[in-house]
Figure 1 (cartoon, protein in one colour):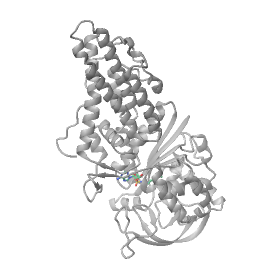
Figure 2 (tube, rainbow, N blue to C red):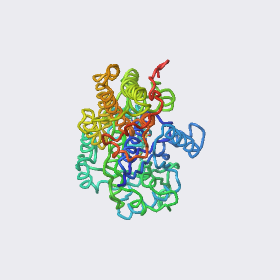
Figure 3 (cartoon, helix red, strand yellow):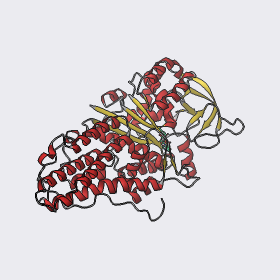
Length: 513
Ligand code: MSP
């Protein structure tokens, strides 16, 4: 099966912040999971490089927009590489092939009679690159997302006839699972119920954009161009820029993951554009919540922005991935709290999971010739830990399918907690002191090691580095099909184990983040 998923294409007005890292890490977990269950994945990310916001940023920095975009998008590319993001594509909307895809798409839409001239009047937020419907304060209107003054615009533009698609969009957003979580759907339903209005897709006097063929002086509105980046991204390296190819290259996407602020573009404008161009619609749009920090919005002016580069350097990828995906229900807003971050990483990863592996493999090696003990009856699927492992796996899978990373992480942790509990109850360190218990101790240690192997496997999409280190400590062959490996008793009895070394150090911060 083929699975195409996307992050938003990030604006290059500034470097990546924790918000962009959050979406990208979540998508990376999905992409890894999908590959592990055997699907052929196309994981797309990239940068959105046109529009007024970028043009102004470049002007303020005294560089050409292209030079500015080259520098910032390279920063994104490198950042994702350092985070070991497994994206298959990195699309930049200044890619020459993209221009051609936009032109072909526009030609289809125009041929449908969906492009009309009109006059656009209204309040515009350059940071959102969006017209705002009804500013709360008519005297000094400002953007509720960016707290920046809105700008009055009055210009003649080309419009896309969104109003024509009212019925189809209504039916689409009612389709179960198209907009998730369901709470976000209501927002979109209310918007659509007010009646869809045509929206402008071109700008005049904005040189930093793709020129609209046949309409001198117009460039495409940045959102019209950016959404099409999802299509261009699917072209293979040596493909020509041919829009007809995209359906053979993985379109439609199974999943767009975005923040809640850009849901309307993805759940309303984008499907209508695709309908107009005769292209199939994506299966699912997941709108996640916003991250705050210690209860406050993160912002440059507040000086409390968490820089993903710094976080990676000081805390490591496992800690941040675990915290963001395990603690915040994906879909809800979440708050980054330093103390909670440290507590969860140290309790879950270092104490519960790391120690479980370390102490069990140390005992096994010490008493059973440097390797996995003979299993005895512990290979039976009716072993108490086998039953718990199976129950955790059965909760994990549907959770991952629904992007409920929290439940998946909790199921994994529950198995580690159960294995620790079992070890404490059986107390092999006491049993070993009495004669005649060797077989029982062997079986108990086998069962706990086997449960730990499952924990390592289940962690793979969420904290891939830690998972890899654990599997090395358990002498596991990483080329095994993952889901098949989640069968009780696959750990080979009496196979050698490497010298134990801690897989997860405790996270201590000398200075606050
Ligand atoms: N360029 C558009 C997307 C075009 S997609 C064809 C854009 N870019 S963005 O860089 O401004 O935003 C990217 C994503 O970051 C959005 O999904 C947005 O919701 C998300 N976030 C921005 N701030 C955020 C937080 N504080 N927390 C979580 N996500 C946040 O929009």
